[in-house]
Image (cartoon, rainbow, N blue to C red; front, top):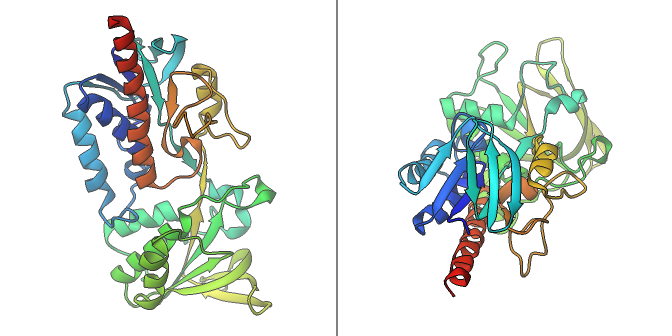
Amino acid sequence: MQDTVLIVGAGPAGLAAAATVAEAGKKAVLVEKEDILGGAPIISGYAKLVPSGEWAKDAIGRMVSRVEGNPNATIHKSTKVTKVDGEAGNFTCQLSNGQSVKAGSIVLATGFTHFDSINKPEWGFGTYEDVLTTTQMEQMVAQGEIRCPSDGRVPERVCILLCVGSRDRQIGREWCSKICCTVSTNLAMEIKELSPQTDVFIYYMDIRTFGLYEDKFYWKSQEEFKTKFVKARIAEVTKSPDGRLLVKGEDTLVKRPIVIPMDIVVHAIGMDPNEDNPEISKVFGIGLERHGFVDRAEQYTNSQGTTRRGIYVAGAATGPEDIDTSIAQGQSAGSRALADLYGAAQQAAG
């Protein structure tokens, strides 16, 4: 029985799993395909996290430091797992850097891929400079200034279009991405804080700020920051002769067409399955569910399990997830992996 857990992916879930293993005195080997740790919040330049309101670079930075500073943790950056042999308790994993790792159990925290708004061309992304994604807008917030990319002017009106790449069967996205509504209401408040003269609109089918987020984000953004919510079905985004963007659609509450000029249009992009999931499925010998996310085992007695014994999964690898839940699942998966190590050690000693 090996005394090591292999963790694949160094986003919030993977960092939580690695810390759980290493702080319990076992060896954690963390493999990350990118050249930096932190996952989407760092790679995509998120601003303030939901729901804590803390800057991503600070919060995730602490998680990274906790793992990097633990002598029980070994980190491989710019690396992938290319082959997995063996079985639960005795896996041999080949890495793309030529090294191999013998592990008793494995945690997959391989995350998601942001929806590519090019797949929704009628809404202007890739055609007009002032049509952005939420990740691009987060980067602008992190820089501390809200301006139109096309000419640098301070926008009078910004609108956020919800469910771009979510709940859209026409483009094969049948799922809700869970966190977009809350992220968008938070982003609306951040825009208003930086640019008080800017009016912010949110166009929505439904608002799904679940749990306590309803009060902290949905109502707060309306009542304190005067965000304007419009229940609408958007048809297209075009450009007017004066250079402003025109958001065309139907106000579904009053059943009438609307055409509203905007200076910046923001796509609230959803979570797609990790584009590497077909490869991950083959390498690790695990199943994918019908949308392409990692398939989970029965959850009530096999929490964080996959379709292969000894391999666990956490975070947005199994479907859209928020950061706090991803961290909790990472700790849970790390604990399951640890339990395997300790259980096998007891059996060997007995």
